[in-house]
Length: 469
Image (tube, rainbow, N blue to C red; front, side, top):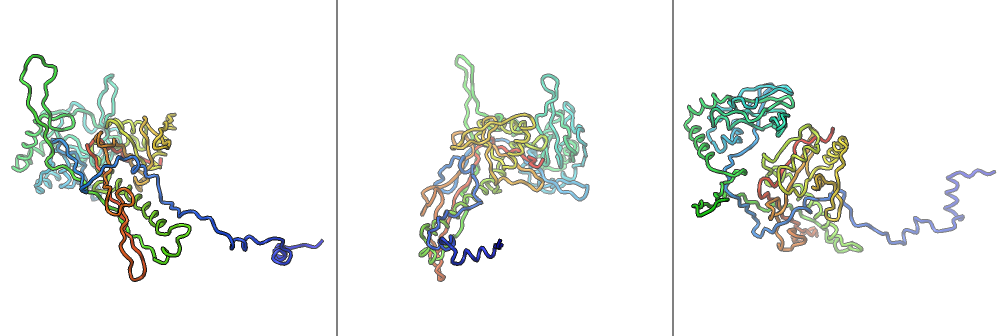
């Protein structure tokens, strides 16, 4: 028997023994079926789909609100050198007590009056009903606000974390008491300023004394639970009593949102545009991919921009940390309870997976809802939509955004302007820029957008969600 090697078989096929045309040669006479250019960087962009878009004809949107007497509720920043932790003097203006106080020398003196105290998990920082005689700044760690429930069981109704403060109201009124117990949930570093130290500083500084007196007068003004000037009303009366007179005051310096822009210059060589347009128009395909990239950047800015992005524009009272690290059903219930009519939640896909693991561990199976012809996961009937623009930190933590949407519901809205020159899509235009001396055709592609929060409780954030555990 004669043995035929693979090489010999291949040579035989290439010779006179071939009975049909080779496929490689046949392909030279065929027309290849091609796909349009694909792009891996395209995401679902649920934020752009869900937000109601409002026309901004003048390029600026002004959010008019009722006058509020809320003094401020910011977070304080710290510096440390080894074991020494100090509050940054200018950051003390984040306390409602010192909002808009400008004397840096007095702030520096006050910052030096804070002393460090360390607490282990389970230690009581302050006890309910004890004299409230100090200001507390949480420099590091988490502390729980605990109060007895109706049936004598303790209930945790709040968490304080890095940068939070408590007790600044104590220095405005003497003989005040703590309204809850604050207990360290983790190892905590707390900076404490006793009331006596603060009162001594008030006696020595006329500017601080005048500032405190102004706050006391303002605190006597009647307000509603949102801190807005109260509208005087009469109800449940009979006969002909004297009805109270009133008016609704407005903020004198309302916030204005200017439309932001994402732009790029698309360049196409004239020879490419002239000769290589069959079966697909090269300029249109280039433009399609450029617009997809612009829309991706638009959503990124609407989430992360420090001026108008959602992560930076949520009121600090609407920012809550997780109780134990991973996002749990209890955490999402707390997030939803902070506002009426939550329409949607947004989270990084890894955060949604972490929440799913917590549900599975408890034997809970969240449902789905139909949204824009898609079935998406939901909690309490509120869709939880993936948004990969929400960052995951190097420590493995992320955030969940919850919002009420629409102008009618005083929620979160998207801002754009339609009808702009050379408009290609709503609030996006493509403008011809000419042909240079290298025969390159240029087009300016611009997308105009912004996002506005109409009232503070329209937007909330669950922070520090661990996604690795």
